[in-house]
Length: 504
Image 1 (tube, one colour):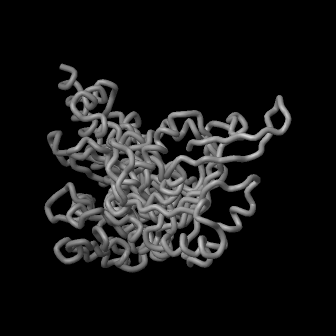
Image 2 (tube, one colour; image 1 turned 135 degrees about the vertical axis):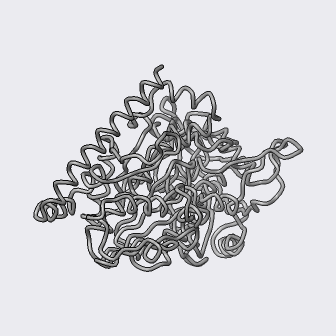
């Protein structure tokens, strides 16, 4: 009975909307000045144009073609898009699935295509088929074709013919020179300069950094649209960096959904899918991550002065990189406190030597160990530091792919990440900077047939769109082996003492 009442209510609303539109259209057609005034008004009022004349499609209801009656949050989204377009600013939309965000952005694109001359609107998604598949209204361009097709003739560009001007991945306005073009996967950003570019499902791109680089010079207005896909990918990093405006579209903002709907989704779907697609939860949207985000957030909240750390050894972890998007990361940890985290790009071995030596010389107390990943550039760095500056008691290199010393982990890199995970279970203090949270909370693990943990490699993570966790690897390196220290320090209730400490 409740469902029947809702359907009847929906039918009544649609009937009223059709009647309202027919009356309004009759007036516009009877008075050319009124029509000209409407064109002028809609030029700066996209939400009114969409609500007055737009159509959308929902196969779950009958009839499936229905008036695009915007609800309040959708109007807010259009205002958000208009602000970014007018002010040449990037924006981000984090959303619950099935909230109509892609439909709204598609309708906004058509509005811009109709009312503003010489605009180039770009659309991209992780697959070309998601951008445009003729006849499939799940694809973005078919949504826009349908929207244009069902507009009153007064708002369709002069000379427009769908079979000529709305071909695959392209919709041309023959009257004012504006266009909407599409790209998929790695081709995103290759199609030339754009007035505005929409990146649908942007948290799920296979090689997002390549796409970011291609778009960086091609458009002043880039709009990322996605549900979360865990930590570590560029979508998540941008979301929490605070550099661009974020529009959050939660299921609670959709009047078609209520608590009963949500409870049913929880019953039908896995917790990971609920977190990712409905709750907009970045931490829980990917399961089997090794480091608990809650533990990391707890460490961010601890003040270093609240941790008694005077007798702990000072250890430097170095994860070197030279070319590409990977960073050289240097982390200084003293027991349960991380003193500093620094990253560098495009540095030679000689430059890195000088940076490490300067860090060591500036430490408030003597360094106990320098642990370095000696894969690639790291091997030369270890050799040069040993030849020119330090002895083998201080500097040691490790291979991430070496066999683990822990029975519950397969490889050395997994071993040190698990040691770091255990460290986060204690009271520790670390500053949230340089993408530390994303680096620490993005990597997933698997269990081998022998029951051992195996951390995913950097290359595997990049296939999921996760940026190389260089800072995480550098901090993990400080757990490469237990460190003994003999050092002078003060106790508050004694004179100067001497202590020998062994541990991480």
